[in-house]
Amino acid sequence: MTGTIRRASAVVLLLLTAGAAGPAGAALIEAGWTHAYVGLENEGDGIYLSFSNEIPWNNEVFDASYELAYVQKAGSQPTFFSDPVTGFTTEDAEVTLHYLQPGIFLGARVPGLDFVPRIYTGFSIDLKVSENWSGFPGIASEEYGYKNTDLDVHVGATLGVGPVLVDFRFSQGLTGQLLQDNQPLPLAKAEEPPEGYEKPVVGAKIHHYQLGVGFAF
Image (cartoon, rainbow, N blue to C red; front, side, top):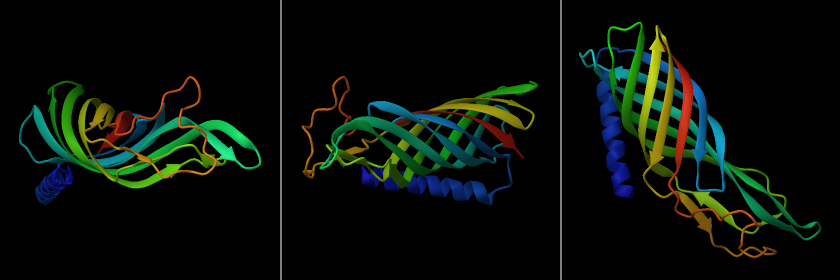
């Protein structure tokens, strides 16, 4: 899978270079909200910021673009914590994953309207730049982490009026991401999750939704 990610990265970088070398197209800056499943019991919310630019293609219906995005994907898991003084407690272990995502997209739009509906699809390389967990009130019964790279497939739709557009997107990761730290932890309670909750899904593939507003210039 590492070889696949490297080959895909090379394709993305080649297309980005090709797009940047051509005549300038419509550039777009965008920001909004994300809602993600990261393999834990509870899904989480974050933000995203992106810059994209059209790859020159003289067609009224179809278009191509490249994008560089910063994306947060978050979640939480009810977890046993143990402390030699306070004993056992159950609290949410919260994580926010921070990614840089270079990507390539193909779209189709309806020309000749005052408002411009568009659908699109594409893929990106997800490069994890940070993994931030909430402060633990003691020693966790289980610890988890995430891989450093992933591949995402995207499907989305936009609605634009003049230079402003609204964008909705669903993104599905293609590789298993959630890892479990099997190192024995002192004072750790049994590996069963707190009553009424499910264990994290080791090897889970991450997916997320995002909704945002963009401005073309």
